[in-house]
Amino acid sequence: MNLGLWLHRSAAHLPNRPALFCGTKQVADYGQFAQRAAGFAGWLRDQGVGRGARVAIFMPNAPDYLVALFGIWYAGAVAVPINAKLHSREVAYIVENADVAFIVTRVQGDTGFGVPCVDVSQGMPLAAPCDVTERAPEELAWLFYTSGTTGRPKGVQITHGMLMAMAQSYHADVDPVRESDAALYAAPMSHGAGLYSVMHVQKGARHVVPASGGFDPSEVLDLAAHFGSTHMFAAPTMVTRLSAYAEAGGRDGAGLRTVVYAGGPMYVADIIKARDVFGDVFVQIYGQGECPMAITCLSRADIADAGHSEWRHRLGSVGRAQSCVELRIGDGDGRALPVGAQGEVMVRGAPVMPGYWRSPDATAQALRDGWLMTGDVGVLDPEGYLTLKDRSKDVIISGGSNVYPREVEEVLLQHEAVQEVSVVGRAHADWGEEVVACVVGDVGVSELDSLCRANIARFKAPKAYVFLHALPKNHYGKVLKTELRDVVRRS
Image 1 (tube, rainbow, N blue to C red):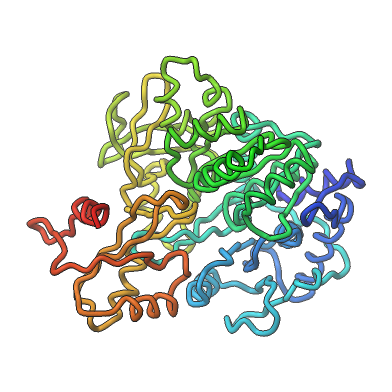
Image 2: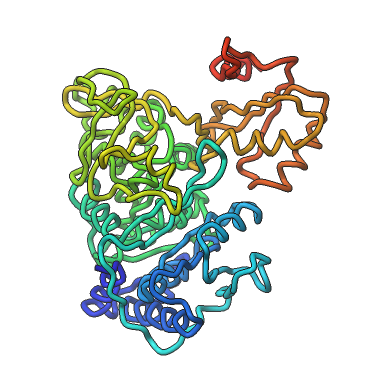
């Protein structure tokens, strides 16, 4: 089944239902939304984009993002959403690796990626409408690129069936969607916020993109108050910034119905403060691109139950397994460990990926007998609450975006004066973590900054440098990042 059928059905049932908004301005009802998606699909077909072809969406948040996404699905093609903040070299790698046939963008002129592009800044190109193309549940819907510890992005194959399982589990475990709801896209639509569009389309809810295209606390609160019954997906750092702004300005978050947070660690003190400001609107989920948004859920009831003896413990967890998955803690060989034992988080079920795009070796490492080896270390308590202890892949999560140290290290090592380098995260009040590079070598900060600007996205570049005579290592020559983090914390 093609996910595009959910838009087709909502449009048939609720053609005049308000659908797409830029700020408070309505730009399409559901009938128009579906008509434009079908027309864009027809245009793609006219350009030679056929079933299974990959079409990249490289643009910031906008109402037409959803027209492009569902139009790609109508055409039977595969969406390749790309973070609009990525450096052009990073984009070029994804475009080449995914063998992209076409790029949807809001950049005028040739993007220089060697692939046909269409600039939709003045509207979507439309042709004779295309019916929803038949697709099987195991066929690809979304190719999601997530960096690995090697710094080389891997394409996670996300199928129509995976997203349908994610959506049904959302209704059952996270938050049932209603026609009267408004989904507010303040986080990048190339990631979790965009994934969550499907269940809101399924139920005929409204879709609101801030006029700024991003996250501004004042704008978010104003839009929530205007629309009412507002849902928002947010990184924990967005939640803390929003609650701090609201508290300082005496705002109570009127209109916010549900804030689903994920994508990084949420400290217990921060969620308690946010709840004090906004009330019982919060739900936490834990997922990965390899099992999108669908591993565990810490429910609204759990977060609200301040009188429970285990309340603080639960707030420090990521909740219990969602309905569509099995969850276990495993040892180094994937064997199940007893309750209370610390080990690797493993998950199996309908939303787990079939593998990485054209990467059989990485797929074999990640999947064992159908179980996804998440790379995260955690503990399950007797009631099934999962607490994450560490990120074994050393990922730094800054502002809800993943930064992989190896990727930054490889760029810095391009400088001939850099002898050694190791990148770690340091706690930051606004962004959760910031990137810090520990460098051995006689080189200036400005030179390293220039090197990073030329090769990687700005959010991945180090915000600080610590210069050392040598990096601490163990007897096997492995850098001791635990010691480095202590050095950075004291610097």
